[in-house]
Image (cartoon, rainbow, N blue to C red; front, side):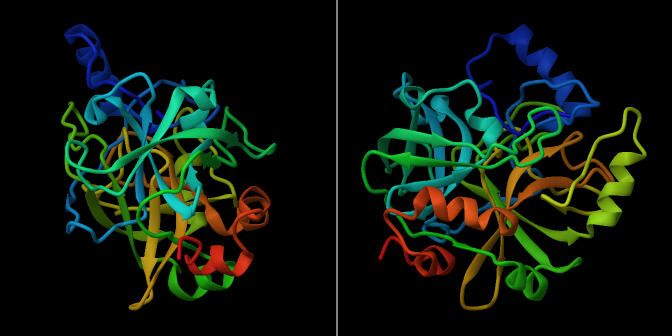
Length: 296
């Protein structure tokens, strides 16, 4: 498996060829039993988001690269005035000085605002080997542009994200599961929520097996064809209630991209709400975080 994070846009040709082979078999972050490989997840089988319709989406970019397209390596979601929710594997081995957050745009070459990072928080329970607890909160130096995305409670998840419910995932990740094609525009795709039992049985039956835990939520089609991929890591998986959105997952890992029955695996947001409150609580109340009003 491969984490859906990476920066392959400027690699030399021979590296791209090698990664194309790896991505054909794995994507995002990889569990313990599988070989961990760096990759750069992107949306497969999706379409461009309507401009301005996903104001909570941000890009994690390398601080030393001024070109946003070249610098983008992961996604994230605004959850507070100075707070971004992303994947733990996106920030592993990085310091606050290494990362900047691009907010306020859905195009990597047009608009937006970069801000520096002052703090990166990862749960103690995060297991790099299995990607269990693959979630992180980044605190920025300056207020972010856009709007905050509400976090799903377990009750929200039961009501709006049961198995079979439609969920949306967004990102600037790879659009070619067996190659390299990174978009400038934010893309999105709709995928159904998959029961934890179905997802667990699928991955446990692989050789070598991969681990799906209650801290994860899965989404995708049995037939494949639509999925998040390299470069989408850290971005949001969210559901609509008709009037609002709730984030239920954070792009984490998968085997390949959009392969049949190899469902996308996401960190389960509802299981981390108390921990998230502790990271953002100085600036926003629990009610503001839960309702996505922390930027108002």
